[in-house]
Image (cartoon, rainbow, N blue to C red):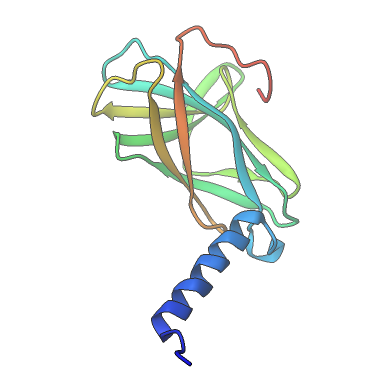
Length: 153
């Protein structure tokens, strides 16, 4: 009888761990984050765009969004809007059993130094980084410049 190699067994264990972490079965580690309603309105600028999404935390542990990266932008910054004034922030809380919502007129992502101007129908990939949870990769579809979501925001 042939036994699987240690590398194959370790790879299978790692794959299973990643699947389980994505399902949010380990609430103590901060797992349980999911993303919905992600989109980017088609920008008018060649080198800057905004992005919106909702991060849902189904776990009993609060977390924090600490940064966002994308190979398609020189920089992605996180902004909050309070009292009509926008400011860049280093992190935003994702409450336990709660949501962090990015919407027009509120919290949002700013894609700066874009490598190409996103056009409606395309997608941009971003990676969300957290204090406790593993990074989450999100495909953000580019919608029309006047797109208004009907749910989530």
